[in-house]
Amino acid sequence: MLKFIVIGLGALIVAVLVLMIVVGIQRAGRLVATNAGAPAPVGEAPGSFGDKALKLAKGARVIEVRIAGDRMIVRTRQLGGQEELVVLSLVSGERLGSFAVNPE
Image 1 (cartoon, one colour):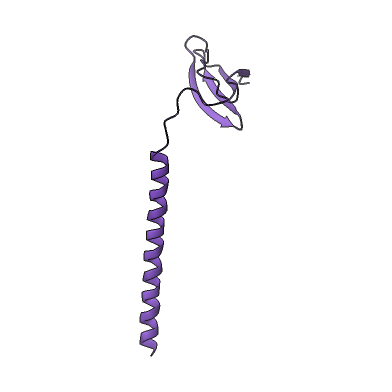
Image 2 (cartoon, rainbow, N blue to C red):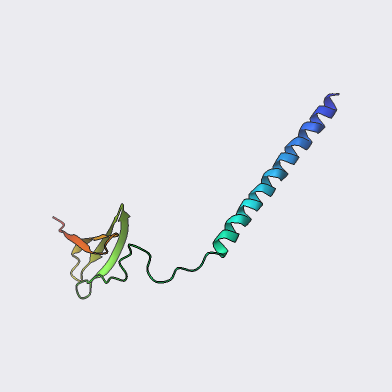
């Protein structure tokens, strides 16, 4: 009797695993189908600011870029080694300000 219960529970576990795999494949297929049929975006998204250029001093390099909320912080290093943090708005694309990093 115990042998039949163990075999039955094993079969039930296998059936549930197969069901989970089938449902996962179906959901993944639906996601691919909805994204594949979506038209490619044309032009700029509403509220976008288009292409902007960040003007740096001659010879300056971008060292790091970080996103914080709706701000982008760009860390730059000039030829002489002085660093600057430039704060940009991700909403408008405008340069909000900068901080000179002066080691003491």
